[in-house]
Length: 405
Image 1 (cartoon, rainbow, N blue to C red):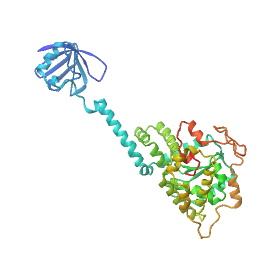
Image 2: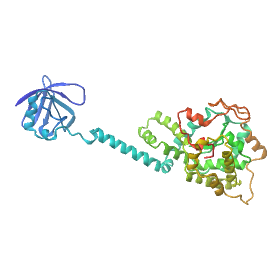
Image 3: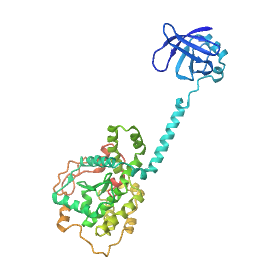
Image 4: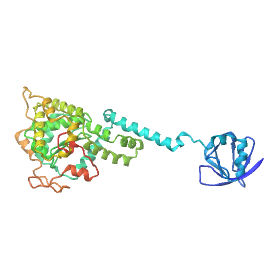
């Protein structure tokens, strides 16, 4: 039996074993002098790691232990082993398993990512209803804190009480929890819903409203989005793969950080036309149940249309994208319900409405990133600039275009 000298790597550690290799009729017997180390490799299981070349060291492995490696420098060993294991010459190299092929693995990963990217948005609606309430609450809370960090919340005892009364009159549209409404002293005609039943109303939108029913129509519309889980659905649609990856990893700190960013995505992402129509229908039902004037929905859209035409705080460069994903004001005004003949109940007294309208009157907002001032000389915040400054480019138009979304 012929013996050769070589080096053996077990694939588990970096240790190099100086070994003696005996080439038998049906196997390689590998052993280390002065130790009990011994390996038996059947010839039929041998594989060449790289193509066999004349006058080059021969590197072999075994199918039973593919991570192990045997290196023989003696060029005569290749000739000898090929006589006993001719399949090494035919294969001219080690054929790795499919998951050990870099190209195959890369293609598999890309295929998987593609499936997730295209499937998760398609399933965003059903997935949104499976997201735990605790997640929705975390998303909404984090995003609300983000907005409040750059703008002052408008709050007076009588004004806040009027907001609470208005929400109570509209009721709970089967949302994930009690509705929370905050008015922000912001120079923008807008209102938007966050995951977890939180609604933000911009002060300039409140200024446009002339009756409690009109503000109730805005709130009912946003409550419709909350009820249908549209903010969560929009966030999942925008960050589907990241959500999947975070759920897969499950690290609590990363999860908390991601939920915060997911809430921001809910604010940045536009709703579909169907989402807007659904929210309008729910708003009409809530207003009717509250005894309010449901035709206020059309009145609000009319005011927003005039604001758009008057270029009030609108980023007109973004309106094309906004209108491509939202029903037009004309369509929504035409679809709005007519005034009911039923006896209506006033949602607020005159004094309560005046208190609500003046809820921002004594607010002392923080300095806005843009340093702008409103007509009263108070500093106010440009929310679009805020999201851009916080590395959230492309804030979509249900925030940026200044329209109820």
